[in-house]
Length: 91
Image (cartoon, rainbow, N blue to C red; front, side, top):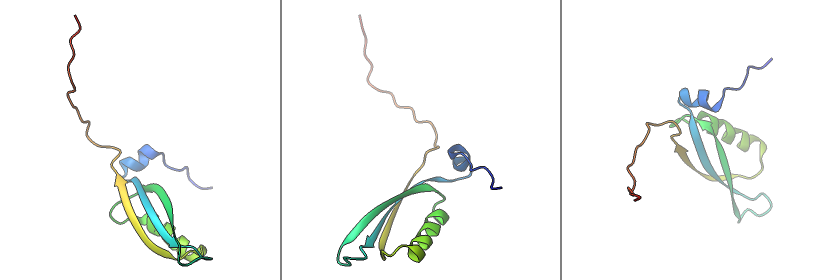
């Protein structure tokens, strides 16, 4: 029996953050065309083990050869930011 998947909060507390990758690949039937695929998952920067696991799966199981990968990530848990906005007075 597999264990319960950790919640997004549990993953974030372990250092995981949302990583987004734009994967560029060649169309198998039209190799002169490049297609874009967006992948998003919780992962750990800068090693990105989940992304590399997915890319390994891609290369073994999907016919479209990879051209390039661009990665970005977001800090979901961060210190609270406080900004003072405009102040209005009503009479």
